[in-house]
Structure formats: structure tokens, C-alpha cells
Image (cartoon, rainbow over all chains, first blue to last red):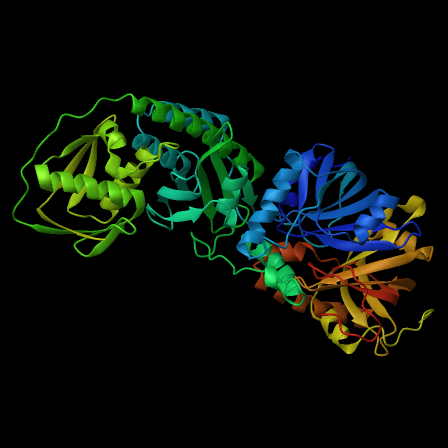
Length: 448
Length: 167
């Protein structure tokens, strides 16, 4: 092999479609473009098998194939001589390819159309650079190097030192943005049902974005969460072009009725690179780290590996902190006089637990219910200090007994109140301890 | 031209317009032992009677393919639009190849400008596009015998019946 497969992994990120040539038993060639070529190991690649087509028919009678790939940075081109070995219809390789396919299908409303039939595994006999036909100038943009092992070690150490969820979230976002060098980062945690992802913090185009919700299973982020597998996309624009080409074909067939609407992208207006890494422990989904960039090819496979290490560590810490929080005592009932100089209009709608402060929407759902309860106790008794433990035991909050998500909801609530600069703040005073700070006299109204 | 297979209605005018529209293209051949060989192709040019198509290859890049063509083995040519992924595959036989002449180079230059414009619409960089171009061109003449839809999705790979539309 003239060039190692490892050295040309960027060619396999799908920015420039690869081309494959196979031949029938009578020697008639067939040339087609491929949407996905996956690196497997130094001598194998996996190609997506989506349709029963001529390529498929050919390799069943003649396993030889030639693949042409292009480095999207330098323009260097490579020919790979392949021999088909087998098709996998389950297992990690298949699941990884399938997850990416489902995510893109979901974005373009084709979740019921795209289906991976198998991952075709080919052995690479030779890999040679094609003689350049023009000038090959090398990378046109500086490639951001992936984080080093030293950096990853520092980050995991910093996460280990966190003693509460808020500190852990702040440390994670700080590490991803700072030493790891990623521009736009979102941290989402699952809600009580495990069916939605709640943005608890983000850096980049969306500001803090606290409270934004994404259904598990929808779009790239939701699919990565549902499948509990990372998804890396090198140039979303090209993937969408491909998917929309398929969609246009489907629209002309009797399967047009299976198409759904395209999903608007929730983050950057025009992201090109995406990396979604789920947070989870022993099969339980805890959340998602979502990275995006306006630059194509921002995330290489080494970035995916680095963020995956951080995500695994973060998952362990999330679980450890949840256990520690449950053992905290009740808070002493602190009482503070209200500031009578200012009036704070607090309106609560029981039908969806939405809260408006001074006529501005703040939050809804369980976080809204918690805020209403705390403010109610404050108005009735002047109480300002609370503990997680008493909130867990408070029947009016109707917390899930199956999935304790109180810390996430409280964090989300604190972020939303801070983002909106409301006269009501929730301050964490210790592990499992909260203080309500109100600037003004509250006028509480509740509507059913 | 040594056209061995008449196919005047195979390539309909709509396809000609498409093929002349600044596409990315590849030529596939098959050698001894059923070993496939692939090379980048440039600037497909359909003859006025639509019975043949000229393709341009880089001589250095296309060594194995040119050797296979010399043995008059069948070939396949796929062309696709980088903007919307519409594509066609044309199978046929070679009617020979020779060095590109001045008129050919002019055709390839004009075609290349269309290709570059398409690539720029999908934000490929100028340096990347330039690196894909070959200058040591040979002209291969292909006589089509069958045409297939190559746009991804349902129907990809299906044959286009003679004289029908393909979109």
C-alpha cells in the first residue's frame, strides 16, 4: 500500500463525494458516487449499502472494486483497490453508519425513507496517490489541531474537582471553549421523561440558550441522543444537498406521503461542521454535548475521540453528583423582609406551569412549577432558604419518582432568571441549599 | 468516428444540455481479471448527431483506463452536478482515443469555467478546484449503448428508456 489509510482519513469525511467503480461478470463497469465511506482499521473501509443497485449486484459476482477519494483540504486524490469481504447488518460499524444516516434523514424530513440495509466491508489492497493533474497547494485553511492528551488530562481533572452541577456545567463549557478550543458548544441534559433534551448552557451563537428544548430522536442532536452514539458531520451543507436530492426524487414517487417537513437548525444560522457526543451511563441517556462550527471540516476523528473522553468523564460526574445531592440535609428556614420599594408582578399559569415576571415570559414546565412554589412560600411566610431535600418531598411539585431531575431543573431555572435579569434570583448557597432573592414586593397571580 | 452502435434517440436533447452544464465526471473501465479502473473525466461533449460523446482524461492519471480502452472493453461514464446531485451514467464502447487538439483544449477551458462556477456555488475553494484539473489531456470517444439515472434516491441506477426523459 503506497499511502496508509490512516493518513487519508480526512478524505473519508464525505465533503467531496467518493466514487466507486465495480464490474459485472461480463466486464461491464459501473461507476457511482458514494455518500459515506467509513474508516474501519488500517486495511478496511465500510461503505453504506442503502439500495439494491448495480454496485451491489456487481460485488456479489465480482468482489473487486476501485474507489477514488479526494482530500478536501489539499485536493490530493487517491485510488484505493478494494475487495468486498462481507456485509454487516448489526454491530458497532453498522450502528454508527446508521445513526448518521438517520440524523440527516430526520433533518430533511425523510426519517421514514432513508434506511441503511447494511455496512459493506471491503479490504483495501492498495492505496495510491493519483498523479496530480494541476497544482496541489496544500491545505487552504489552517486546520485546528485536536486537543492533546495533556489538555484532555487537565480537563478531566478540572471536572473531577467539581462538587455541584452548576460548577460542573461551567467547567465543562469552559474547558471545551478554552483549552480544547471549540467555538460553539451546547450542553444539554435530559428532562424527567428522558424524551427531551434541555439546554442548560451554551457558548457561541445561541448565547446561554438555557431552556431551549430538543426532542430526543429529532435532528442531528436528537438522533445522537436517541441512538447514544456520536455523530460527526464535516460539511452539513453538502450532506443536506445530497439529502434534498433524494427528497426531490422521493417527491415524484408514491412514497411522497411518507415525507415530513424539514427541521430548522436550532443553532448557528449556517453551521457546516457538527459534532454530537451523547452523555450516558450504562445505557441511560443523561444528555448531550453538541459542538458546531461555521467552518467546514472543523472536527476530525481525533476531535470526536477527545470530546468522547470528556463526555464519558462528565457522565460519571453527573451521576456521582446526583447521588451526593440526595444525601444533603434540609435547610434552616431563613426569612428575609421583602424590599417594598419595587413591585414585582409574578404571574403563573397552571395549565402549562408557565411563569411571567413583570409580563415577560420566563420559563414553563417543571422549572416554572418549582419557581411558583418557592415564590408562593416566600409570599406566604417570607421564606428565602430552601433545600433540595424538602423540594423532593414536596407533593405539590409532583416530581418524578422514576427519574430525579431536580438539580437540572434548578440549574435551568437559575440560568433563565439570570439571563432575563429578573428581580427574582435563585442562588445556590451550598450543596443542596438554595436562597431566593427578591428585589421588590411580589404581586402573585395564578391563572388555571 | 468509428461508431459501432447506432443510438440516435438514446441521448435526448435534455440530456445533452445537462451533460454540457459543468459537471463532475468519472470514467470506469475493467481490465483483465475483472479488475475495475477509474479515472476523473472532463468536459463531456456530445456530437451533433448525439451518437457519440467525447470525454477528456489526464493521460498520466488515466494509465490503466487507457490500457483497458485499447483492448476495446466496455466502459461506463458517470456525470453529476455538484450543486443538486442530478446525475447520469452512460455505458458504451470506446471508439478510440487520441491527444486533445487546440479546439478540444478550448472546449475544455470553456467547460471548466462552468464547472468552477458550480463548485463555487457549493463553496468549494478555488485551490481545491484547481487541484482537480489535468492539463495533459487525451480525447476519448464513447459510443453510448445504455443510459441510467444516477441521481441519488428511488430510481437511482434504473435504465432510461430510449427517447424518454430522465429527470
